[in-house]
Length: 263
Image (cartoon, rainbow, N blue to C red; front, top):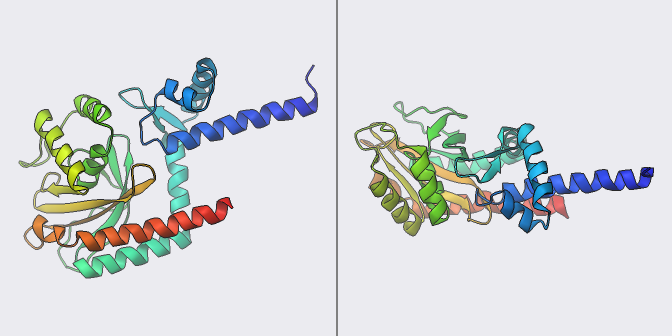
């Protein structure tokens, strides 16, 4: 019969494993399957399978269409709650407001959620006419600047598998629905380092996006969108340096706070 000490150690070990799996998945950007997780954590595949299956049943994890383990709804909600911490929200809003004032158009942050992107936070422009997509609104991953940038940053084979299985829905006459052409578009976006939407999601809306972080440490995507009759896609691209500086500012104070709390 196990002693209270050994029982406590077992419970602690289980909790450690849960935290290790969640942390690994949260930082993997959808690159890992069950076997990869087991290998990276030096766990027996049977033990890893059992733990991952349990976390999926609880809603903390899920598997995507190509068998990669990704954050589930509960884990995503938790991470969003942390990001929505009032102090961080005020800092991000200050950065977004300055950027929006500089460009004169709506700026915000989006995060991936399955095969959609979620408008996580935004600051509206002051124009009477604006494209109103509220916080929390889902936008298609294959027809938005941030979504295309997210897909472009995936490993090539994963990117191909995701595109092959997700389907390409037509939202406007400019939406790219040909798989081969779309993959070429993602390669171009990966090489240039920023995303763009040339009226592919909403008729008359242009948008660009830049990553907040890198492949290894990514907190989302900073975007700016505008009615294309007022600010064209090419005009938006002129503000890429300002957007990249704003993304770095958001990243810097987020990482600084993470380091402070973990020390």
